[in-house]
Amino acid sequence: MLSGAAILYGSGGVGRVLARETQVRQVWGLTRRIKPDANSALIVVDVQNCFITGGSLPVPRGEEVVAVINKIAPAFANVVLTQDWHPAGHVSFASAHPGSKPFDILQLSYGRQVLWPDHCVQGTPDAALDRDLRIPQAELIVRKGFHRDVDSYSAFEEANRTIPTGLRGYLKERGIRKVFVAGLATDFCVKWTALDARKAAFETYVIEDACRGIDLNGSVAAAWKEMSHQGVRRIQSADIEVG
Ligand code: VGL
Ligand code: ZN
Figure 1 (tube, rainbow, N blue to C red):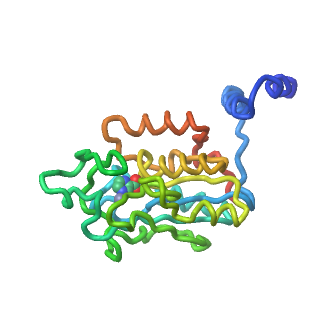
Figure 2 (figure 1 turned 90 degrees about the horizontal axis):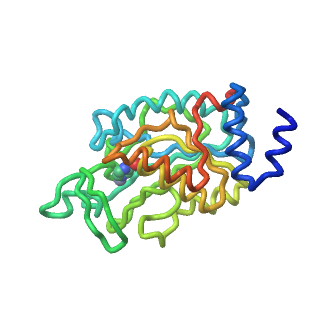
């Protein structure tokens, strides 16, 4: 194993070495767990009533992420939560576009926009965080999608790609170098948040079993492909050392 590792380290870029290391670990059945450190943050994306059964835009089995997130959260000294937080009449709502219906796609000034049922309206119970989340140490809640004419799947930057949320600066200023992303939905807000985390040069992990997707026309599989191309590391909650 050790000499194998030495050969691998001489053979290519860091990304390739890490990918090979993961493969080697899997082949050998080794369970080396990841221990989040002081420079790691967990980003819990949009675990809100709207995205859970009974909400306005329920993600299939969305409620299942809560127990998984509660299990791993104690491993993180730094936790940031996000909230999708739209004004009434938001541009992403089908109801704001006469003649359109939910899940239609519309070309807007900043690009293609999937139209959704009205969801996560500011100040409504639907927009509240799931009451069963147990993350008392969470230090920041980032709200996004609050400009009426722009959506924001990403926790870092709005969909017109010009307005930052401030999360990048917050994390950098706090010395965070690694982010772990969990929550809803894999193929929208989790994906965009993870891709933007990579763009901001964070080492980025998405915890697969702590996420659920909406899955429109294969969008979950496409999301994993896109994330892996950008160097996002796909892990499971069991890969994280808790306690
Ligand atoms: C989301 C659709 C619309 C998400 C937010 O949190 O993934 N999806 N708004
Ligand atoms: Zn939304």
